[in-house]
Amino acid sequence: DVVLTQTPVSLSVTLGDQASISCRSSQSLEYSDGYTYLEWYLQKPGQSPQLLIYGVSNRFSGVPDRFIGSGSGTDFTLKISRVEPEDLGVYYCFQATHDPYTFGAGTKLELK
Amino acid sequence: EVQLQESGPGLVKPSQSLSLTCSVTGYSITSNYWGWIRKFPGNKMEWMGYISYSGSTSYNPSLKSRISITRDTSKNQFFLQLNSVTTEDTATYYCARFGPLDYWGQGVMVTVSS
Image 1 (cartoon, rainbow over the protein chains, first blue to last red):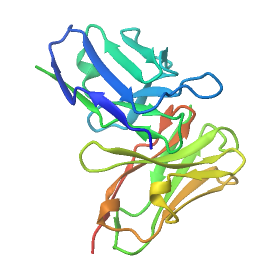
Image 2: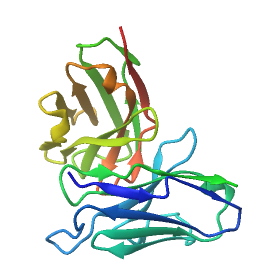
Image 3: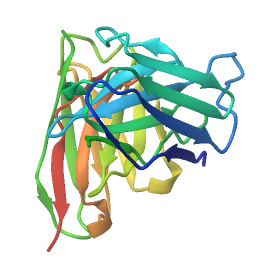
Image 4: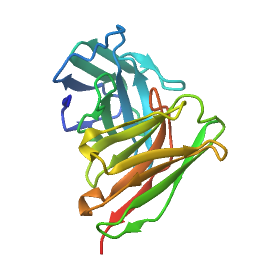
């Protein structure tokens, strides 16, 4: 199975700071059709996970432009500029290139 | 608006079967793919499997022959059955529209305990 290694495990930030989360894959996530099925999700406390980014860098409808996904191959990053209170929670990367699909272990974003 | 809602028992005895229903409104399950995901105590998330718009299925091999995902298109529902459960199947179970996972249910917490 593809292993997604997320770092850091937790991230303490001050409101207004930039935050960066890394997701490294044990295999390239570029599919044979040329698409990279790498997604980012945020689970806020007491809520279901919500889609932030799909296809490495495409923001889902309604996601603020302070969320920026980037990367290719095996190395991906989610950057959050100017962290706001509603950004706190656990972030997961997820790959749907290789079956079985897999999640990273999560990164908890909390206030310093 | 697409909405999903899981339902089913919150407590299941070891060795029995876990059965959950995902009711979908605002979109037909004969389009797209529909998946089951679970979150274990702590943060670990696991992809369980999906059923497609045509009714074909794909399962996580880690669940081997214990899992089955089916559907009732007349009710716009799809179902999860997990057989021979153990305490390690204690988790919150989510259904979601897949490709990507853009709409999720609220989740149902299932405890496996005697």
